[in-house]
Amino acid sequence: MVQDMHNPEFYFEQYEVFNTSTNETKIKSGKFRDTSDILENEKVNYTENLTSGQRQTVVVVSMPGLSDWAQDIEHKQNHLKHLEEQPNTSKRLQNAAKLKRSYDETEDENGEAMEVVDEAACVNKEPRTKENMNSAANVVSREHLLNFPLPDVASKSCIVKIYEDTDNLKVNDMIEVIGFLSVDPTLSGEFQPEKNALIEPEVESEAETITHNPPPSLVPRLHAVYVKKLEHCNPLITEAIDQDTVLKEANSAREHLLKALTELLLGDRLAAEYLICHLIACVYLRQDTIALGQFCLNLSNLPTQKYPNYAKQLYDIIKQFVTKSYYLPLTIDNMNTMTLLPKKDYECNRLTSGVLQLSKGTHLVLDETKMEQGRLDNTGVHNVAALGHLIKNQKVEYDFKYYKMEFESDISVLVLSEGKSLLPSDYHVPLKPEESSLEIFDAIVEAATYYLKEDIMNIIRVYLTNLKLVKYTISEDLQFVEEDFIEMRSKADSSNPVTADDLHRLLVLARLVSLSRGRDTLLKDCWDDTKRMEAERLQRVKNRVQSTF
Image (cartoon, rainbow, N blue to C red; front, side):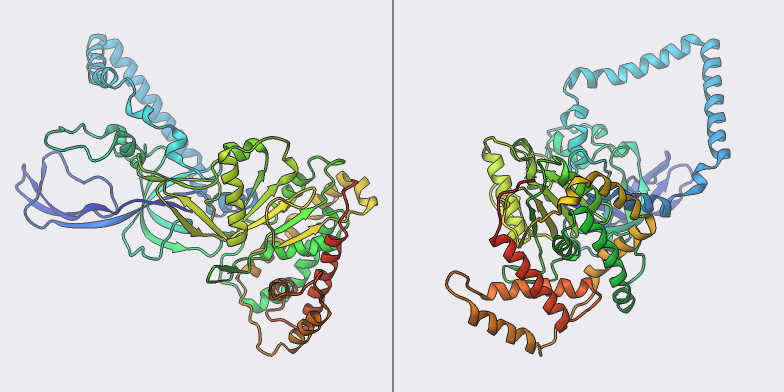
């Protein structure tokens, strides 16, 4: 995922070198490399045949929230077996042993000479240690350099240098890159030559230099030959989707998923149907300030008294279906201490990541059952407001200190709570567990895990991603929708009004009900199912009682 974009970098695309030994001149290229290819007896001719160019520098991180199953498949698909071959390893070990022996022998023969070398090395290192007790390496931490959005999630970071047109590339885009790897240790900001302040005034602070030039062992460089923007990152789908095939196979995948989720939601089929709609939802169109297609679901009345970790157990199953997800317990401590919004760091001239800097299609599960008594400080209040803003508008406000800038997002938010959530939601479904299921929940989780074998799991994983990519069309002749809405309006009263928002909510749900059943347009049977689901849901919300579970 593109985490940040730095200023363009200037380099010598082509330059001429003069060999002082042979008096020959050569044209060399500076493209796809960080350091110039100049031999000891060569000099650069700065007056002729010098072409400068610029390349875009982009900071990328491993896909935030990428599921373990997706990572495992990626590793299997991209693993280079020849790197494991024994001869290479043993050859390297033998060479290392030889080197060690020759070093030992030299030391025995001429201990005095070795001492001189060591002393010289110490002399070179000493001034830096004395001058900079707070040396460059200590100016910024490892975590600062890696700058990952999600805390406590193992990730990698890389600086990609792009030579082609990058106008359509944005922060948070998912990309696939092929290029030349560059890990020359001299690229690290720690080893930048000290400048004479009179000749070259300082334009960057030490912290900024190291932030933009981290050690390549920690943050490698990649000179891109090919960059491709991705619509999704599900490794099970490697080709463009065939819509007819996807729709044909949708129903059987839905049956597997509905069966598993109904069991996990303690026999509540309605909640399982809404959860399926939530899992396949995505923003398909933006109109003015409205993000069409977003579907924030609040499942309440969770049996936390009997099963305190029910929300986490439910998430542990959901994350095995979806490609990217993150579980965030809404504790007072988390809200008061976590950085949710990305922030511009002017001292280091970079975007410091936050938890809500996620790529499109990520599932964010907010566990409100972990909220305890306490006081939200200023940070906590801002974090709760940021979550509400994301849910309502599918936008995240990045903090640029002097102003806020909104970045569009497409993050599916699922809120799990005991009572109705404090956060806004598009669809609130109070859970209606069966008594029999409540008694044997642990056995249900075990049975679901046994039922969801790898082949069934993969069918569900492909189904959930494909349905976000399917093109859905709505015909203009929807007589049955028009008639039903007129009837609903005629039956409405002041205590139970029917507005245009209700019709919009029904149409969004109907779209997802149709897609989940393998239909790419709205038909009467799906519309009737949608009306049934909404009527049952609204009845539950109306008759909601205090949880006794």
